[in-house]
Image (cartoon, rainbow, N blue to C red):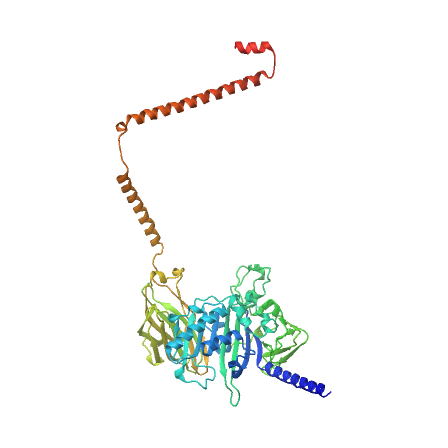
Amino acid sequence: MRQLFSFFLLSLVSFSSLVSSTSAAAADYHEQLVLRPLPLSALLASFNFRSNTSLSEFEAHNFRFFPRSLGQILQHAGTQELHLRFSLGRWDSESWGARPWDGAREGGTGVELWAWLQATTDEEADHKWLTLTNALSGLFCASLNFIDGTRTTRPVMSFQPEGDHLNTTAADTHLLYGVLPHEVVCTENLTPFLKLLPCKGKAGIATLLDGHKLFDASWQSMAIDVKPICPVGGECVLQIELTIDMVLDIDRSKRPRDNPIPRPPPGHELPCNTSKPYHSQDTCFPTDHQANQDWTLSQIFGRTMKGICPLTDPTIPPVCLHVPDSRSVYHSDGVLEKKNLDRVSRCFEIKPDVDFEIVLPAPEDESAVVVKPETPLLYAERSFTGHGQERGGVQTILRNPSPDTEVEFIYMESLPWFMRIYLHTMSARIQGQTAKNESLIQEVYYRPAVDRARGTQLEVRMRVPPASTVFLTYDFEKSILRYTEYPPDANRGFDVAAAVITILSPAAYSLRTTSLLCSLPTPDFSMPYNVIIFTSTAIALAFGGMFNILVRRFVAADEGPEVGLAVLKKRINERVGVLVEKFKKGKGKKIETGVGQATGEVNDPSVETGVAKE
């Protein structure tokens, strides 16, 4: 009886400890989806997944919510902090406003990777960087193994660690940054991303991540951030945050699956702005599509949300919607809606076994369709200048929309080695002023390129006065590559990575410019084949003629031996005789056949005598 009571007590303690550990574990992971309608019939969907794991458990290979596949790579490469970006498209800041997460989860077109590695020397850091890129390349099915020395830089001012690095020194920590602007982000990168989640995309907001919808978006970015967090008076944890941001076209997303090819609507269904003076029956000026902001969750993502992940923190609502308070929002049964005090955002608490659906009907007041986007701190545009195949220039237009606040930032470019910058030509001027304004540039860090070894690194600390537009320009020279260094699509051009702008004041904010397409002097790759064909033909003609002259013996017809002519005549006569005999036999058979057909099978002697007489 005593043993039975001890067993029951032990089971009760084990069950209570399991429940407490489960509740504590649930607080270490949460996920949330934020939906924010944008102007021009666009919708911003931000997926965020965050989990914490104790550093002591991580070092003991007890990963809990941290993906083991990624954790082993970080431990083997000595990575203290990691940031990885997969981006596609362009963020339209003029229409959509400020970037989500203040640009902290955004990357340039293609793939970006920067990490802090623990190493004693630069050579050791390069070796660990090579190990890290090759391992991540296999994990995420990307071409990260092509980030070699020519695509790797060591930023000095641009990036700052987001985590708490307490037991490390600056001498043992190395920051390396690599970029692949030509990388095409597709569905094969999304599948490994979903495998890093605790619920593997089987439950919760991850069930809405469909590759067809994600990569059909106007702009999308996938971010992975790993950093140590050490709160005051608490235990240090290793935090991994996975973020997916996408801007969907509502009209395009609502297109049915059985109509993959978009067909233009009839003329009478076009939304026209009738307030224009030139509006008529045959002239239509399109509206800004704000009136078409009626949608459902299943129309946007192609499916409904399958409950919630059972491991997520129940205190954080899984779905939030940012729409004006005057708009009507309908949701499925069994869902609790909570409105925040800002009268803009509303969140939904969902039960684990409920299929969640949101319905936004057409708004009654078109002026309250969307919440007005925030104005970004800085607008940036970059383009090539000049002409020709030898030299060119880069011009970056930086505009400060604030009427009374100055913007200070760091402008960084990671250029390929075949773009050789003339640093003395770099200048910054304010629009409307012809003279150079050197006071706009406060500090410059320049690391020149080494041919086929490393790229050009340029970091500029500068400022833009309030309500001003600054032009940052410089010239460069194009190098000629070797014949084997050109890609198969050499005439398309070479991708140049986007510039990274890190705003220091008045607030922390970052953004990327668009990538560029540099055209280099390209040889005519058809000429080698033309040369080979021409040379082979000339050699064949010359060698064949010379060989015939040296080997053949030319004699006249009357100089040949008579025996040969006699034998030839005899063979010709024999052959002609054989042909004549065959001809005679064949003719006789035809005559007999014709007589038989004419007379038929008749045994009349008079007929035979008549034939014989004839």
